[in-house]
Figure 1 (cartoon, one colour):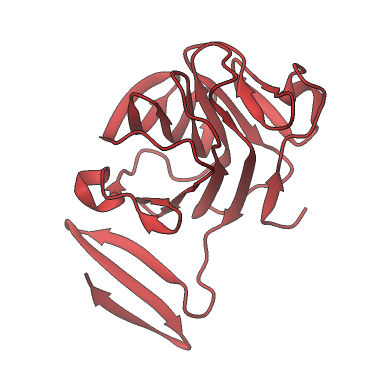
Figure 2 (cartoon, one colour; figure 1 turned 45 degrees about the vertical axis):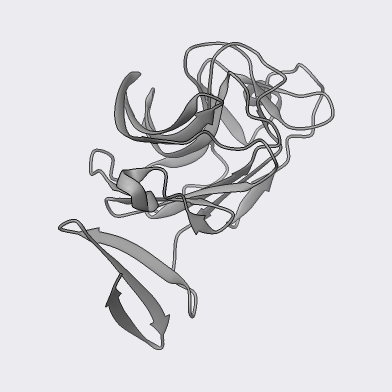
Length: 212
């Protein structure tokens, strides 16, 4: 299948998404279809599944829409490499977290403000060792040291997917998920961090580089 791929999680309410859908594979615990559409956590401290219809590039992005964010967590999963090993940017009503999971062992990269449950688009891009986090197209400056950008080189590639935390809760869910390769169409900005400095490049026939 060609990327990008989008899933709005339309299925029989209460059924296991990783079991019912050939496009998803469960990793830790599971997600279930929500009544009225969407994916909700179905138990477990960590709940993860990855998209298995396509193998994305190492540089990739995931976008989700979260109409409700409550005491349970929901978020973007990138570079799923093996059981319990992946990057995740997620939030509950207690705050947001950018983390590296190593075989189920949690490693915090940075933390920020809780996401609003108002159908904003949350998007994370992973390019090389640079992780950039966006809300409605703007970098989330409450996380990543105040600029929405972190660096981590623990995982070099892998599949993308969806992450959740906590037991089943209809008050935290994802209504839409999109995964894609990260690449530079004409005029598209690419952000990388080198030596603590953020660089932005744009493809304009030939690449130009600027510091911001």
